[in-house]
Length: 104
Image (cartoon, rainbow, N blue to C red):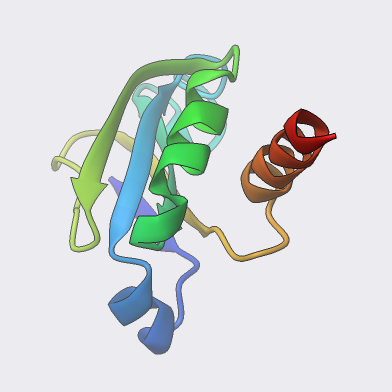
């Protein structure tokens, strides 16, 4: 399993939850040739609901689950990429926009 984790040392301490999905589109080719592709978004506790909702809305997402920040994928053929969710991320902007629209 190839693991790519975009978090810095500081973000590993602050972004301690990962919304993880099995990627139905990327599995089986590219870095996940003959294996499974996982994508995860590391976030802060306060952003978890927005990030989970955004990941579940993706059409390529299967088996969406929440794992701890020290997660390591199983030792099988495939690829796992952990991205970082900060304030400008799409999932958080969508939630803020929805809350703003509801208030108007």
